[in-house]
Amino acid sequence: MRLKQLLLCGMMWMCCVPLGAQTSKEEMFSTIEKTGGVYWAYPLDFAPQTRAPKGYKPFYVSHYGRHGSRYLIGDRDYKWLVDLFEEAHREGALSDLGEDARQRLLKVWEEAEGHGGDLTPLGVRQHRGIAERMYAAFPEAFKGNPFISARSTVVLRCAMSMVAFGDRLKELNPNLRISYEASHKYMDYLNYHTDESNRFTSSTDGPWAEEYRKFEDVHTNPDRLIASLFKDKRFILKKVNPKEVMWGMYWVASDMQNAETQVSFYDLFQPQELFDLWQCINYRFYVGNANHADGKGIVVANAKSLLRNILDSADEAIQKGGIAATLRFGHDGNVIPLVALMQIENCNVAVDDPYEVYKVWSDFKVVPMAANVQIAFFRNEKGSVDDILVKILHNEHEVHIPVQTDQFPFYKWSDVESYYRNLLK
Image (cartoon, rainbow, N blue to C red; front, side, top):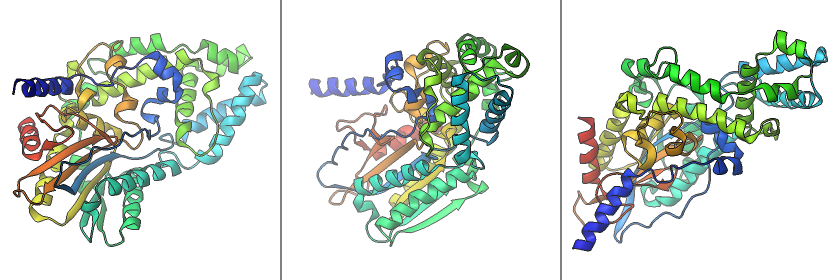
């Protein structure tokens, strides 16, 4: 008995420790695409899932997913750089490396023009893959002709992600009954932000903004990059904003892993430059969506209506039966507070020093493109109606939550629901 108590205490402690949260320069330099942060394309390094205890079969899956890989938010994010390099080309102001970068930008623009903010073909493939693996992992839930509710925010890339996901499920079982909805009716939980959290996260007058401005200034050092691309100092003086160009090229470089055009811009940067820029973005996403210590939970609270919907939908599926899955599709700014509110391993850590954030919280680990949370429900058909176990997956990895269990990754649903209902109070 004593050993069992020690093991349980140890597991509870592990839930509160930022497992896998430590990020180092060496990790970033070895996979430079990770410096893209939330542009990190969905990784496929899954461990085998743990088999359910004897007698338990999956019957329902609850899901929330970020849209898949996308282009930069707007055409303007490409076009202004293309125009600048074209003007510099006409005036003979580009170095040889700058001319080469210009040609690469033109290739990227051929694919990206008109696609600002759209799901890329890779984004479609990501959601098809997640759907296929969900179907394979929990086959009993999708047998016969059960119902699936699929809802997305009104943003097109989210709706397209939803359709890609649902299409793959229908291919695997044409008898599935899937309801697709992308409506403002559901935005109060699919993409919810309070006025209070918006005031805190404001980059203009949020309580963190001035400290961040200084942090970004220290970590943005464009002179070497600009000198390598432009040879005419007069053109630089008159036409080039060095910091804006550096950030613009960083975003293009970061997003190439999500596009079809096989072009890279990472050779233009030194690894330390990318690491420094990423620290800025990582901190911005932490402040804007996660559990920054100064926010005292107001940003994480944005996910309360979503968590409530997850709990209520699960209760409905348990009581009614015949519901295979509830699928929801939104954005990084919804997944981040959700996993923090659910207290999934490292996702709820609270710090306030921008220099320390990356050491305990990394955006690409929490919310890469197509990031998702799944709760799989298992029932013992020979047990009582309430004999239900769940396991929680974050980006398809089995994860801990601070609820006691002696059979991780499985938890008693009654314990999990009680814990989360109390959080919502």
